[in-house]
Image 1 (cartoon, rainbow, N blue to C red):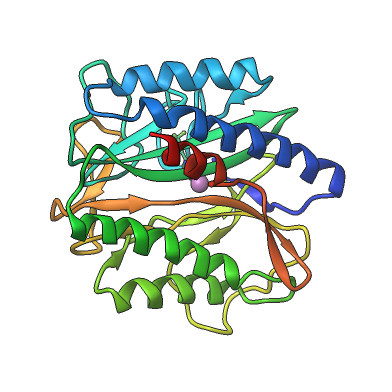
Image 2 (image 1 turned 180 degrees about the vertical axis):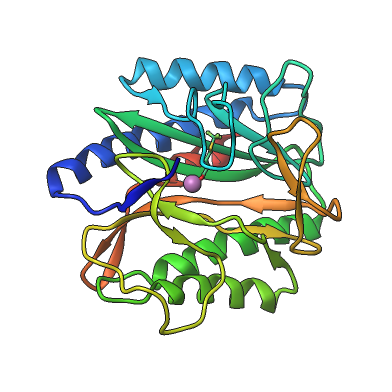
Length: 269
Ligand code: MF3
Ligand code: CO
């Protein structure tokens, strides 16, 4: 069940979310050298769990029952390949191959507070239009974050994301949204990837939200994958996903998760 409260906190609790976000950000940097052709997604998952625990955090997805499912999620990571959008299952049978894109999504809990983050990686060499999908999706996230300020409109975030993505003739996922986060993984408000400017609730100071555009090369329509967990594009087109956990502050967002460890590590491989 989604916790029916807005994710608004005092500074003491925001600093706990920030600690979780820091572990999470460094986890992604740690994983970079392993994200290569031939690795099993199960290996990535095992390494991720060990890293999080060694840093004093807990894998927040493991054992978590999302609002849209009946059973708890069994792994540390969601590993979604190519046309899979979110909630791909790690498996010893799922091996990364060159030319694929892989979206890694993870949550970390520290002292009962959660941070949430996702990043889509190329596996080996990928085609130029696919590189463009990754760039547009990451840029869409930045555009959404740039709209965040105390007193601003929730609708401005989705509008910035959607209008940017549309200008590149890609589509944003139907139904899948960002969310309030912190005390629980999924809290209010929902943070849609579409919206009308100047509409929706105003963002209160110290609200913590996960902003997470999911962008498809083809149609926006989605469906459940064969394993019962993965959500994939209905037309089989590729999908990318980037996510940050941010705090609403006066005049701006404070971004708690960071892609810097990823970008540093990518520069070395
Ligand atoms: N990371 C997803 C999100 O960003 C939630 C994962 S749910 C789980 O909202 F079932 F995979 F744990
Ligand atoms: Co999320």
